[in-house]
Length: 100
Image: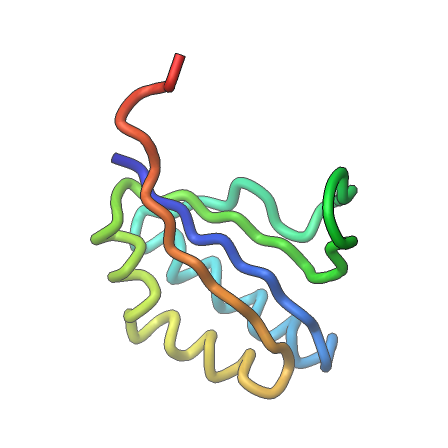
């Protein structure tokens, strides 16, 4: 079943963050992932206003998502992001079938 990586990012150094953005897609693609959304238009409809950059990735399964995150390719991207941004990354398992 599909798995998702949900990232909330606060960019501190936009120039260095561009380096991260150039490296991350290489690892995402290699491990079967794809972007569902990446920092697009956003509107908070309930609760405190969300101000962080939001990214949602989809992978074929939890093992693929974990392999991506732990990979040497993504390690290189994480190193580039280290001083450029703070973030929270959550790995979330999808559903087998729709609820309705």
